[in-house]
Amino acid sequence: MAARKQLTRLKAPYLKRILLEPSRVADWDQYPWSLPIFRDREFELEFAVAED
Image (tube, rainbow, N blue to C red; front, side, top):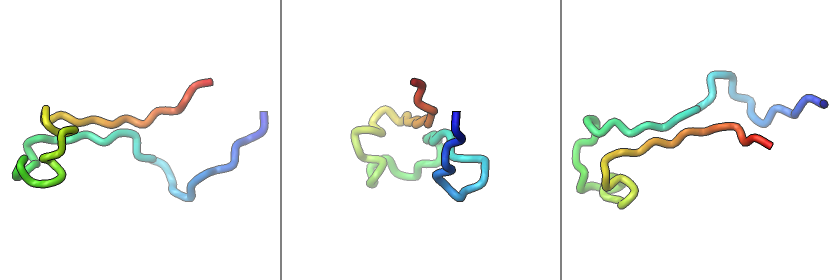
């Protein structure tokens, strides 16, 4: 199998996860925290490698 071309010049570590810490939000009525996606005051986005 041929090596894949590197798609970024960034060095490791790469961004793996985005996590909302509710205690750090000053005002839940202000944008973007007022958006429905944050209604439950929980948000986590994890990046994973797709498997064939």
